[in-house]
Amino acid sequence: MLSQEAIDQDHEVRPEWLRIPEAIKRFGMSRTKLYELISEGDIRSVSLRKRGQIRGTRLISYDSMCDYLNELADQQKR
Image (cartoon, rainbow, N blue to C red; front, top):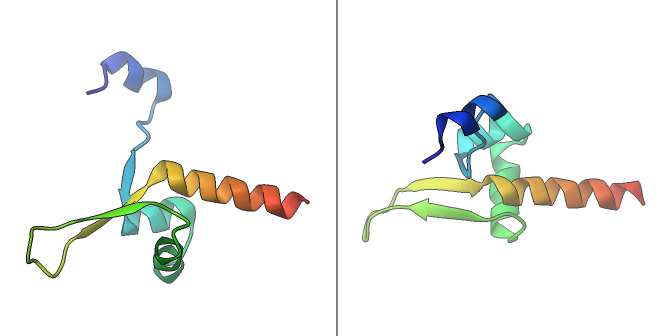
């Protein structure tokens, strides 16, 4: 748990994991593109669901999204 000091310093707490709708808003990507990146292994994600359950909650790693975008930006500089 973060202390109040850490929250006050950053003014915003950066999440470790994002749900798909949050990732779409934050990174400006389409839902289709996010799932494509997940299936290709370019970004990390986890699915939270109980055993035997068909549907779950998909979470995207914030850090892996940032890493992917930074690598893409570096490639485009060359």
